[in-house]
Each structure stands twice: as C-alpha cells, then as structure tokens.
Image (cartoon, rainbow over all chains, first blue to last red; front, side, top):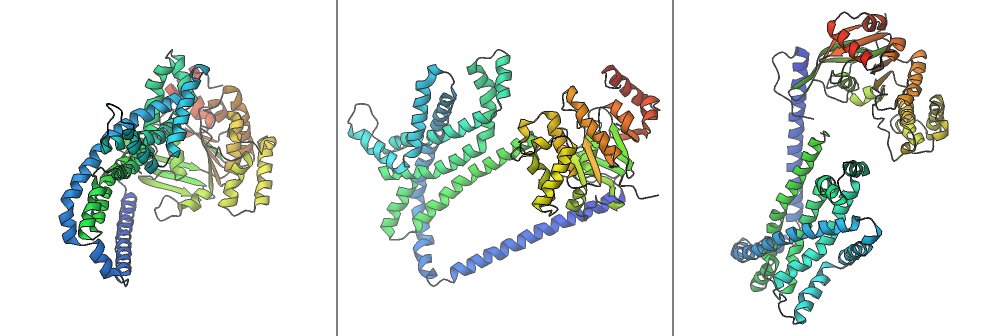
Length: 285
Length: 250
C-alpha cells in the first residue's frame, strides 16, 4: 500500500472514523511487535546465561579488555579485506558478465567460445574455494616464472575473481534468459545487431532483474575474502588468529565476526532497497 | 423491494495525490446487468477493483447484500468469496492445468471435495465449450479460450456478483464474440453482473443499466437506449461520437 496522505478536511465522518480505527490497529500492531521482541530477547538471554558453562564462555569469548587491545590489528587486517573485496567485486562483475554473454552466443561459429565458457563455469563452480586458493596461491609462485605476482593478497584476489565469476556468470545468464524473446525480436526488428540489442536492450533489463541475487553473492564474497588468510596474507581473520594465539583467548575471533557482520549489513540493506525500488517501478507495490 | 446485491455510495479512491474516483454512487439489483463505459482512465477498472476489495478505499461505502464490506472491521476474505472477477489479461495460473485453475478455489477456499469440484468444473467448462481442454495448460489456448476458462474459474465458486473488467479488450476481434456469447448466456440465466466494457453494441443489447464514468464520477446512467441513444450530457455525446468513429458501436 502507498503511504496514506494526511486526512483531507473534506473526508466524511465515516471515513474519518475508519482512518482512526486503522491507525489504532497499526499502533496496536507496533506495540505487539515491540512486546514480543523484548520477551523473545529476554528468554534467549536468560537461557544462555543460565547454562553451567556460561562464566567460562564469557571469560574465553567475551573479554572486553582483550577485545579492545586486539581491535587495532584486526581493523588493519579488515582494511586489507576491504581492498581485496573492492578489486574482486569489480573483476567479478566484468568477468562474470563476459562469460554469461559468451554462454548465450548463438550459431555454430561460436561453439568453441561457448564450450570454453561452459567448461569454465563447470570447473570453477565445482572446485572448493579453499582448494583453488591452495592450488593457485602456492602452485603459481612455485613455477618461478618472471613477472608473475607472488604476493598472497594478489594471488588470493585472482583466485576469488576466478571462482566467483563462475557463480555470477550463471546469475547473469539467468537474467539474460528471463528477458522475454519478444524484446530481442523488437530490438532486431529495428535493425539493431545482436551486440547492439544485447548491450542496449537485453542487458540493462537483465542486470536490473538480477541485482538482488547479485548482491547476495557479494555478501557471500565479503566473508570468503577472509579465506585468503590461508595463503599467509594478514587480513582480519589472520590478525584475529595471531591475537588469539598471543592471549590464549577466543575474543579476537568474536571481534572479527562482529566486524564482518557490520560490513555485510549495508550490502543487505542495499539489496532490499533495490528490490523495493524495482517493485515500485513496475507498479507491484 | 429486495436489497440490491451491490450498492456503492460516495466511493473515493486516490492513488497517492491523484484522485481516481471522486465519489461514485452505483446500485446493482439482483439478476441485473450493469455496464460501465467511459474512456481510458475514467476509473472503470479502479471501481471494479474497489468493489472486489482489491484496493483499500479512501471514502464512501461498498455494500454487498446491504452489508458494509468496506469497513476495516469487515471480513474481506469472506466478502471476496461471494464475488467473482474476470480480468482483462485473464490472469490464469500458468503452472496449473485448465481443470486445476477452475477447481482451485472450490477445493482450497470452499472445502469442496476434489471429485465434486472436478465434476462441477467439467460442467462449467462444458458450458463455455472447453471440456476437451481440461487437461491442457493455459498457454496452449487462444486468448478467447483462456478468457472463457477465466470465466469458468470465476463461476466455480457460485458468486453472488460477477465482476467483468474489460474482458474482451485483450482479444482479437474474431475471438470477442465467443466470450460475449457466454456473458450473454450468463445474463439470461439470471447472474448479477457488473462489467466494464468498450463493446457498446453488446452493452446496448444485454445491459439493463449503462453508467457513463467520466473523470472519476458517474456522469449519467440509465437504460442503454437512453444513455447510448440520447445522452443528456455533451461529454457523453462526444465520447459516443469517438466510439462510433472507431467502429465499435454497431
């Protein structure tokens, strides 16, 4: 429903009474939601804190002093995560879109390209990210080639781009194929070439349609960026690990987890907002 | 005199700041056919959607059998169960067969047994001449056939009031006849119908009352011969002239 305008003075008494009734219902709903949330939170808190091991858990996982002292190094690590994330996201968008477009090419001439793209998706969607990181992160430097990067962060970024492009390519392809064939027919009938109709008609609609699942994959990517720590890059997770080993306490991991959650929340909200805006534009809400 | 099946009193509906209906009064007596005519954007579809409680109204009342169903305390679902609506774009469920489309509401909403619901559905499909397509999916059917299924689906719940929203506007001209023939038969069998239409010839023959909607108000209403033949208002006359020019009034 669209937000209700302020009551215009010429409303009938009947409509005014209904408006008042609807408002009182809305107030009641808000109140009920508030009460049930508080009760739920209280029940969870009581259940957790009354467990026999709670004092021990609190000391090991939730030590404020350790949290505070480990925060700077974890934040430093997180800054690496964010840089890797931004570069990976850009690389993934470009490579994913390219592969998706290759997979939708028609005609026998393009068979090798199509097969290559399909094989790429099968390979990198199937291989576990951790194994891909090991193979590329340790295998490529072992070749001792001139000019090949050996930095853990760079190799980790390349691996993430390769793996995540395979996922995003499938999301893009689903979007491209969800655009009704009549749109392509309309574009071709105006004399646009395949490339022009793709670029100007199909892709703008397809990308808009797949934005929510796309952002969902970005949230998954934000967390998986932390896996580059297995290559030795000091990101937020590795920094937490180091701090944890120094203090014999798990609190730094909790700090890192909270930071990752804070990082993911805006992306989730952006996804929601985008979905609402699309729905509004199409007149669905 | 009996209570009318439908009474609309002072209905106001705004979309945001845009007023669509500015106080509509309308009565549909039992076994009567009332048609709504008017140009695009005059509020015909909105009026039907408000009557079917698909839209929340801003002022006024909708009374079904004398009971105010537009009251926020009224049971919307119960009121909707007593009305059937057929949309311009059919809105059949593409993942169900024709038979499943027709039996869905009787089975799920009205608790009719599968066997009984299917028997009734086949009878209705026979009535609209589509018995042979019971097992087909809607996308295998022509527009006219789909619209006939949509009518059968609306009738399956034995509605007290049938709402038809420009049901022939999305059809090829040669398919319009088959759909209107069914409506004509329904009217003859005593169904109470409120329909928005651009088919003036049909309105002339079948309707008991024609309402001309203009700019969110009922500008004039009366027997078809009077409203379509000798309208009181200049605005109505102009609208009908345009319709005649388009070749729709036969």
